[in-house]
Length: 91
Image (cartoon, rainbow, N blue to C red; front, side, top):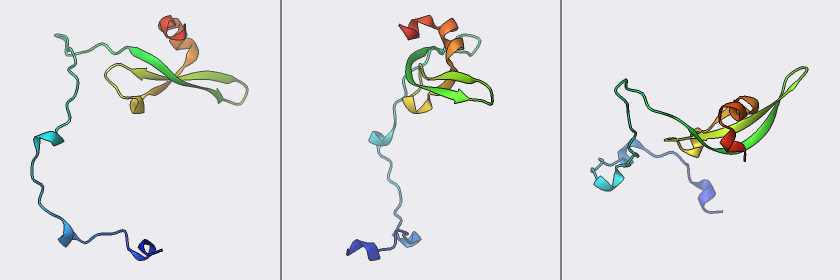
């Protein structure tokens, strides 16, 4: 293997000055903000399910994706609470 001998660290002298480029700008979707400076965040889909095991009981959990957030930012919530508050997600 030729490349196995190459060290994966580079020297500071190899760095170059950054040149701004408009194509590097990431466009974020617009979010409607109310006069109270708040916005509505609703769950959009359930990505995964799991069971959290405690000493003497098991709690069903769901991984929820929220509006204005990527799947990477999904959060784990108790399934019973989500079914009660957002039943349309479980059809």
